[in-house]
Image (cartoon, rainbow, N blue to C red; front, side, top):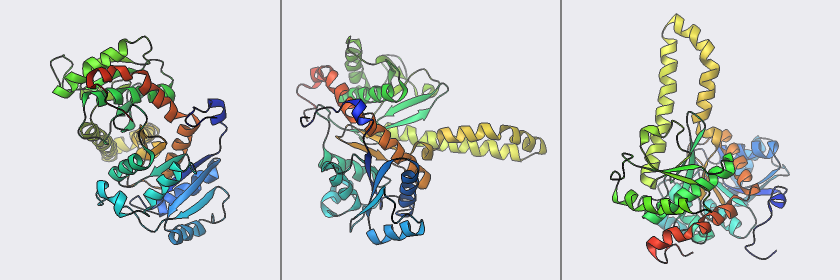
Length: 366
């Protein structure tokens, strides 16, 4: 098969997936990463490569009785990227970091995905420098999911790009709609731009410039999404749309606000129910419902967020990720590999390239 050709899905589905884990990235590294990798290796046929301080990793594997597990291997890296390292400098300053070594394994086709709970800015810079962007895409974006009354909302960008151009917003919408179709089977997902009102005159100069680009792309007979205009934040969770596109600064605030509000609501309900005898009795009946609600908003259940738009699968986990979150992120990354997600995102970007090239000339060249 020629280089760069798309692998047929029936072949991809049968591939043994090999995933590199940045074992030194998270707040609880390498304990959470190693334990999560062991859980994943024991649960599914996924080969996991733990990258980092070999002595510490092997010590944890020994404690777990997994030092000889056939699906787990270790690659040593002498340095670790911290949360305080400047993303733009650490790539050159720490050439033997666990993050860089993990991405080098992906670039050399030794693994098919990278999972990290480390510095998200550093993950982005390493992905760009080592793997590169999909052809025709200006910038990759963090793509995540939020629960709604009727299902799931795909949010793009959730923190990778604080300053964007109209063409980039249009590309984020296409990335999100393609992901939504693959993950949830919606033929033409409903896409909106996040704004402070639904009227055409609302929004910023950025959203007003991105709006006609998405209308043009959506009107194309080959379009795989339906653009519905602006949406206010108060309607994000009512199920009226499937995908929302915004800049990374705003998207990250939305994500953190949603996470914090969900946690606070669960705690407040629990406090109210525990304050009286009648409440405690009612709490027994409501416990299954509250448990289900907590699972819907718990990042550990999802595992991580996709860095959409680079040439391999990259999953970014929360810095506080525990072993369960890492395990689920590994499962998620393997699923993305098996469904050939990266190639399909690239096809979606290519399909609509004319919409933003009209706006920015020869922009978005790889």
